Length: 389
Image 1: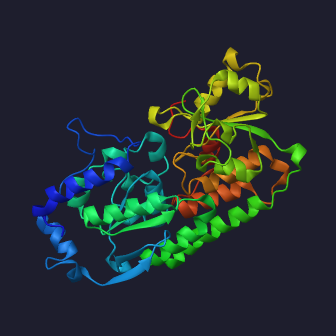
Image 2: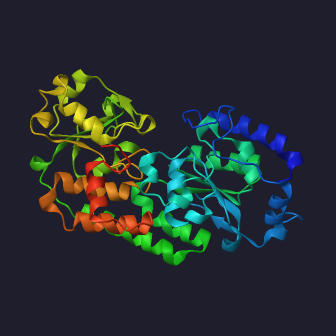
Image 3: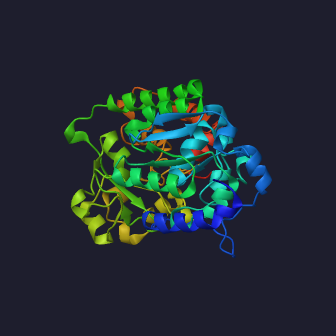
């Protein structure tokens, strides 16, 4: 199923089936159009790994039910050596629990990400994302599993089914809802045979959600917040959207409501922001342009066009920490677990039942495999890690 003689048929089938589902992604590429950082492998190496006499020769298999309710035949845990993530959220999930099984990234890591992620993972191949995925490279690399993370709906399940059929590699679905994080890690623990490690992450996620739910703020004391994306911060995540989840969960009042549209992100005007006049503004910057939240926040604080805003007058404009991944969004993965603690501490410091600094350190130790120093923690909060000051 993985032999080179079938590559062309499989790739054409994959592209024909999957391109409509991946239209919004963009990935770094080499000038010749291939995924940056990928090098082909010899057919013999792939066959020795997968088993020269077919899939059964590579080891045992089992049938599981993934988080979308799909029955999938996958290799036994010990046989899952490499896993292809279909997008950055899937890549972060894999990196946090089984980093040594991560086949590659979906884009080139930037300096901010490299400032936290251990060096051994910096040069993993970049297979692209969306309609820029290099399927030939994925097939040639011979992963044992495809990892799909998204909302649990028919579209996500159909995407996984098409990947399994077209690539000849089993695809499993994991729920990307923040509230489902404990279940997601326990599912992954069973899938990869790392139940003990997965339980540590699941327990942290469970405790985080419980700590946030325990924060009780009277309605009249709730903070009115605007969350901005992009270099000009004029893209926002409306209340109730996937990308605005942690704002809703902290008990803040998102000034952008769903009347703006049914999308996860919408463009607004400066006039709209001035009309809302939020108490607090939190901005993410633009990772694709290497513009941090801190830089965007400083721009807003010093721009006369924003001067009349209450948040600006009171100095309540903050950049989202972004190392190694944004703490609030982009992508909407487990990186938000540390963000929801930070954001709660930012807007309701007197209502917390936990120490933000201690919880941030614990998150980085468990999920990102690093022990933060005091200097690193301060740099994270200040948004200066990975940037020239």
